[in-house]
Picture (cartoon, rainbow, N blue to C red):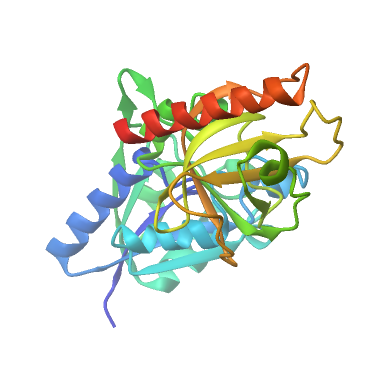
Length: 289
């Protein structure tokens, strides 16, 4: 069995800041013939301390898939409820030394253990492994963090958020039953989507240029409660630009750009006109990306 090289963190979104840590880990692991692994937490601390936290950038499944895609060979999810009150030295013994970790890569300011009492210096002094510490990555002078990406998404700045993520932000779920209004009244039949995880961040109400499913079909997405019709139900629906709606059991929507906020129109005719304009704008945006 190979000894391990480990990267530790929450990794919500597995963004370009995390990518810098992972690339360094894999490079050093290759030189030293170690198996690269990631240690992360389930649930993430924000959700553990606040069960109503609905701003996750990635689900557990998305996080694991992304880490493996980037070259990590093993992803270990530590139950946060069990480690939150573990002393730093005990954490090192139980979670790192016991797993035969020979090298650790973390970001500057990394804290762990009871009351966040463990630091990079604790790792260096108490662990039986080498420690590599990397500075926080910056993009166009801006520090990259999950918090900043959440802010950008909630403000509708999808393009900027995607730059910091390193990929297009995606929401997955299942097909739900719609009213059929979009097809009957607006000539834009849609797929209605029920998000798969209520804690995953949904972009703010509005109209978006998107790519749908793993095949990345071009589409335009509506998020909102249809104020023109006085609906009370919040919905996410996608109109595909290159084919009729499909019945995929596991749809996913990748957000490319926000076109406009949601709004109430004076008539169905006015809404229909705007929908046509939204569709054409989405085509133009998606052709440029």
